[in-house]
Image 1 (tube, rainbow, N blue to C red):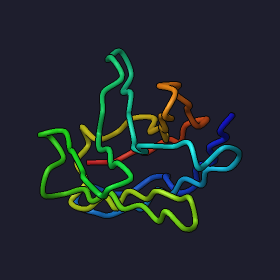
Image 2: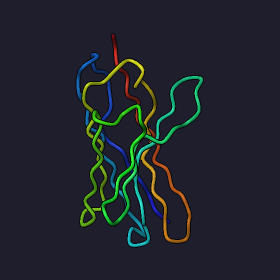
Image 3: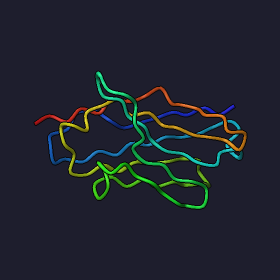
Image 4: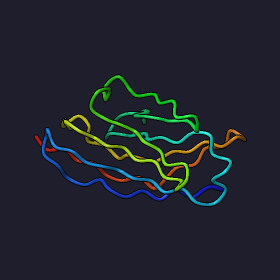
Length: 116
């Protein structure tokens, strides 16, 4: 079992920045990738960014150049630095982890609201 606890999020004006953090606990040695998804009202959940244990990253096209994902394997944390935020980034952001047994875990979600 893996538990994920997020922090960060909140309300910011367009063009501003926010940082999300996620701490994993439990069977953290089994985690092979961690990342962030988001879901806006009335829309499907979408992958924002993901990083694997080797440091390889992948980003949604909509956030490339604005968001940066980073992972601290020693601390079992993953962070998402979000810059140049746009109103369309408004969503509930959820931390995500997948293990070597292909089991997925989710955090409780944190609201990010970008005002115009």
